[in-house]
Every structure is written in C-alpha cells, then in structure tokens.
Image 1 (cartoon, rainbow, N blue to C red):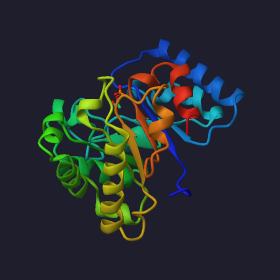
Image 2: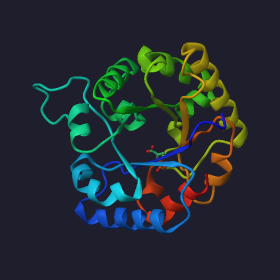
Image 3: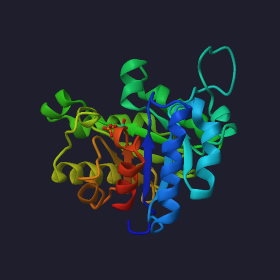
Image 4: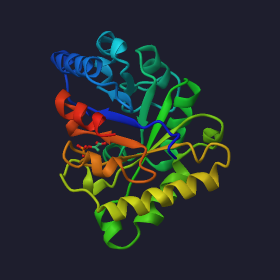
Length: 250
Ligand code: PEP
C-alpha cells in the first residue's frame, strides 16, 4: 500500500460565499511556501465557488471537486448539476453518496452508483462514501452495512478507471467523535479485502479515505493506520491552518 499516493480531500458542504476564497488563498499560500506535502489535495467547495476557486488553487496544486452530481448528463432536472458541468467549472473529482445526501435526499446505493458512473463518464474521479450509523455499529452490523453499500455503490468500471472510496461512520461526522484506532484498522482492512476481491485489477490501488471528525490533533494517528490512504475532512477544511495541518500530517 505504500505505493498509493495519499489524498486529503476537504468538503466545505453548504458553507462559503466568495469571501471564503480568501481562506483558499491562504491555504494556497501555506502549500506553496511550506514543505511540499506528501498528499494530493482536493477541495470540494460549493458548486457556486468552483470556477472562481480555480484561479486561487491552480498554482498551489490544489485540485477541485464537486459535492454531488446528477446521474444524467443534462436535461429537465431543475436545481441539479451534472458531472460534465462540474468538470467544465474546473472540477476533477466529485463526492457521491455522502451520508448527508443519503439521509437528506434519500439517495440509495443504486443511485450513488449511477452518479459514480456519470462522474466517470465525464472524466471525474468519484469519491464514493460509505459508512454505518451508530445504531448499526451498536448492533454489530457495521461491517455488513459497509460491505453492502460498497457492493451496490461502486460501478463495475472501477476495475478499469480510478475511483476513491471514503469510509465515513455517520456517527463520527461533525460530532467530534471518532472510532478507536482498532476499529478504523479493522474496517479499512475489510474494505481493502472487498475491493481486491471485487476488482482484481485495480482493487489493491484504490484509495480508501477515512472521514469523520478528522482534526489537526488526531490526523497523524488516524492517517498512519494501514489501508488509510488519506482523509475526507469536513469542518476542519474550512480553516486554512487546520486543513494545512491535517494535510501535513500525512
Ligand atoms: C464529512 O462531511 O465528510 C466529514 C468528515 O465532516 P467532519 O470532518 O466535519 O466530521
């Protein structure tokens, strides 16, 4: 796994107007003046900021991503944004199946799979999110839930084209709580086993990110776990210094 280049992705969620581009500028400055990071850096701002963000991020090597896309390329879907539109606005990645989308918009794993296929069709790398709820973990079902989500959410094209998986236990998102190192270790090893079984060609090189209350003070420990190939960061990606500290922890 050491040959997998780590990736740190930031998810601004529904936060940020043009004023937030200053924070992005500050991040770009930290990345260009400090020691070159070992990790690839992807930032997923609200779609409204993708195009103006390009000017701030390009020289610092920060890649951009969307937070969701529609499964269709275009059409009568008021308010939705297609993968091709995200690509056109400067994105190279797109998060699909975030637990907030699954919960707020009733997205099923089948819908997530269709979105991931649309992303690949538009030459975007999908960051496919999975994760159990607290009740599911308490019931001892965390691994079976995550396995089912993985099998249904990842398109078969993942054996030919690059995708990213993010394991985000729902109860750790935005709560300040994280699983024990032993639990993250076990889940990421299980995800790796599923990926190599399902995708014999590419499964051992798919990046598996951890997400859920990843912070400057726990990043080094969590990002050092085997089969944790980077992180998906929500709240802590909003502040340039915090996000930079996490990036530098890899
Ligand atoms: C996320 O939304 O993907 C996330 C991990 O959020 P936070 O870091 O705020 O828990």
